[in-house]
Length: 470
Image 1 (cartoon, rainbow, N blue to C red):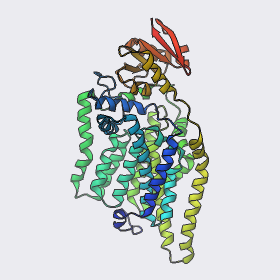
Image 2: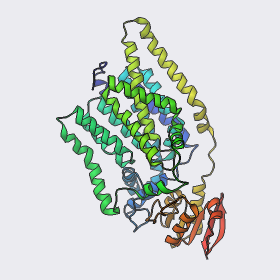
Image 3: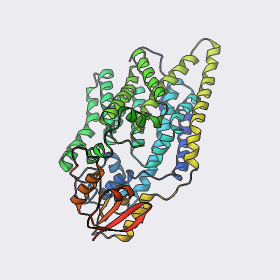
Image 4: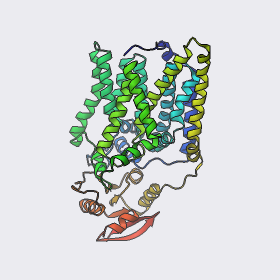
């Protein structure tokens, strides 16, 4: 790391100030309130079904007897299987864990800025980046694995900052097992370890062992480490979006794209000038965006979450160091400017994000259509029925004894159509021909699109048509 301002001693890690604790409690209360006005994402329930089947002794499968890797978060699946073995509801535990991890992430960012700036108000202002982000609020209440990845990223960076390479390595080692983009974070962390701790080469062992162990298991059990859901999501939808549309879909939930680009550019300059460790979140941001634009997946709201964490680290370090420089100035006027700048920043963050948070915290929660469909399946089908659906999460988790397939091939060995696979009628017909379902649940658009010979439509739920084989 290049020369720069002296950092605070390690004892600030051992005896943290009150600010991160207060941030954790406030964020947890806010997220719990928000959870009463939102529904978990349907995709989260796919992981919950894998965890429940694992807990019940059926193995790491979506449908018992079918070894297909349809979840991108094996670590969260294993973590949730433990309370499932104890008889707890996996979905409830998953949502609770998500809420707690969101609060932990905000506290870690506050702790990082407190360490850089030595200022409790600065720590609170930096945590506001995550606290009052409507995007982070959605992630916290979605039940998805993104909050776990964000907490691991922030925790590993903070430990590297405190010269704790071994625990930092352990945290970073699990990031690829939470989401695939965690592999980028792990590789960059290994590069940091190779440069900063050359004599401690053995640290690469804890970094690579969990990944190697999972790779061996996945290859043996599923035949590949690449989840089936990754292949399917790459093909589903209307085809690749334009780079401009992909750019906006990725960055818009995080704020003004131009300001985010300026933040990364500023972080890159500061890393080259004074703080080489900052290359970790900067490099992750650049690689993440580049890979996203190259792959062009169908955009989902939880995809930008890891980028939000990296940008929070960059902003936290830059703001913290700037305030520390002002406080260390010999000019009394500049020393008094620092707290004022912090308060102004905090006010701007609160004002800019308050409207979106107000809507999320006060809007009434209506019935979740996928949960209503799951209840219909419970009441009108039996364990012998084979069911084909679009969104498979809720229906799959709340009907563990049914054999359920999704029309996109996320959780089963669906022979994915080649060529312009986004043609919906060919996609649907291929799925129906492969599994020969006794019950089809189709959206209004899918119902009109495909002819569905051999099925008569027996019911409808909130715009979804339900057909049974004749």
